[in-house]
Length: 376
Image (tube, rainbow, N blue to C red; front, side, top):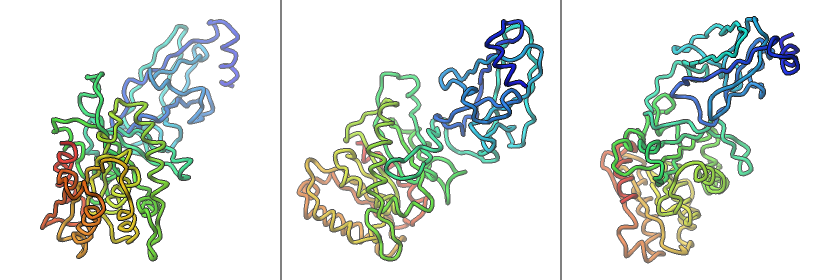
């Protein structure tokens, strides 16, 4: 019935309908992904949660529609599905909102306290951290989507002529927020909030069951893997251009870093060699060089076309029995094949911590020093 009346609103004069403007005055600071679409769903559109006719403007956060006069309608706000509908701040379901239309133009302010899919979590991310996209497409490199985070420095919203270096980081679940971490977060945002040099961080969630595949350049006879080329091509060919086109970045290789730990450390090292023209600063935390000896062969055979990237290695003596020796072996390979790594100590740094373990707390502690060295 209401759908028919709404169509008639475009035909008959204002005596039959009233224009209503909905304004999103407040959204949950965390987590409302910057790229997510927001919809109005209600009794006037058969409660379709992702009806494009009722999508809010992404810039103005407003939606203007015509409704029948002197009629009570019910509605809710969603991010495209009933699993992402609005709730009260504590996560409990809220009753349908109600609006009785008048005979004049109406403007309705709406504040969203929380979303159903993120309710009940205690977030530790600072105000500089945003979810860029909860389902960023990796097509046509990999048939998947991925949650992407972004950290923007405090000055980003005020110094509008300034551009910033960028760090790309793996395993974003563990970088900023305790509620999404597996065994503690790195506190990247808290660390960078206190730095005099400001930078943007783009965090890429790991793929869960696909993590081992995506972060390893060569397969292991026991564990499989070996899709790092596709994963890194996604970062280089799709994600990085997207970031550079929408945020004020310094895109040069000397201002672009990539880092990670464990398999993420292995993948970051590989990225620094394979994509030497893109990444000039590499943070390699407890790298899983044990996964395949092919990584040593690849490094030994590679000839850098220009000045090689700066490499910061971190390892702990309480990790595997071969962690430190594996890293030292890789450094020896590099110094034997690349003169600049042998002659220029500012290009390679190895930190070995006596108490270092293969755990998030260790990488969190070492992160600030690594960044200060990579960005001198």
